[in-house]
Length: 101
Image (tube, rainbow, N blue to C red; front, side):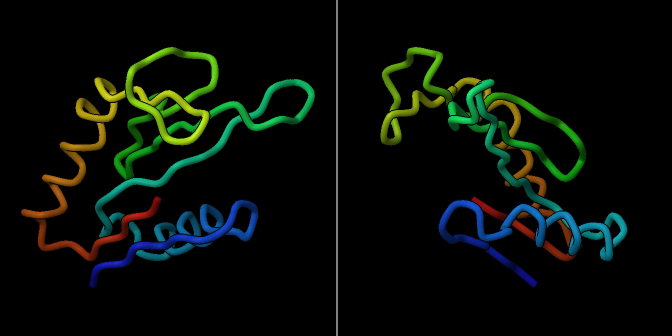
């Protein structure tokens, strides 16, 4: 099974992913993103977390890179180091799969 879950901010995508992954008990491959906010509550970036518990900065308004998505600079080096191997693992795995953006 392959799942890609998308939608507007704040509708519960990450919550759904975490609950499904918990039910699958280690039979899933992939990653999800979580936003982070400043003290005033404004969203300033996103971390990416793989289902094998690796976490890194994906994008932020506080970093400067030539790679942008909207007002966020993308941390391409960390994406390639953490997310690409998770995707490659998924491609070769026979586990159930779950990917989210």
